Length: 339
Image (cartoon, rainbow, N blue to C red):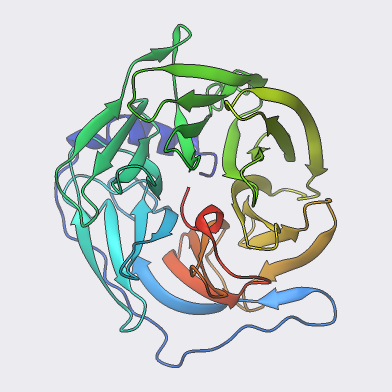
């Protein structure tokens, strides 16, 4: 999730009290365009669908957490949606239509991910420090985890599941203060136990396992770096190091996805683009919007079609919330589907 302005952060904290005033409509581009990699390592994404407008109540719209359901539907969250507006939307990528699958008067959801253990959709509530879950098609909201971890409440941002269904969460504590209070938090699949594999982090944001689930990649928004945690069979950290330093200029590191070849797709806040690296840190490409695109400021996250290379990137700004599509460098897997 991108770093929020003071006004927007305050709006998130009170979003549960906002009243229904309508909902955004999609207006997808009628001609499906494909992306191509050019000689200067640019992958040109094309507008796929207009999902949301800026909400008057919160002063922004912010799309995040794209994740494919088992039936091929693409779920997307709108972080700043007020009460009554769709907080979780379902997109039919074949017909370019969308519908609301969940809204409530409280949640500020920054990511979405399906559990390999129970098949439910898990959402991180950034403001209230909770992880909640929904039935795969929406509804049946349950609180999975709430409360303090090692004496401090979380600001949970993104989620990654290990194969057994345990959650690894990027906790962006200290984001608004600029303090290195952030953590990677591990929550057991039953929600009963929470531990801190890594701490003293600078607003951790993106988090994803590598291809073999041997380690975790995570980004730190206020340091523009991607680090790697090597894990043992019990999920304990055996080593940690800075793996990639992202030269983003005014842009900052947002969410992370990993494709079947182990390539990392690093979202950027402050620039509507993604940086693509291999697992050794070589920059392979930059995913860019068409040159004349205006009013879009951040590309937060991406979902790559499981078993295919079609990728859908969440892009937001004063012009609204959009999906942009491009062809990824390799096929989509669990690590490039949600989080």
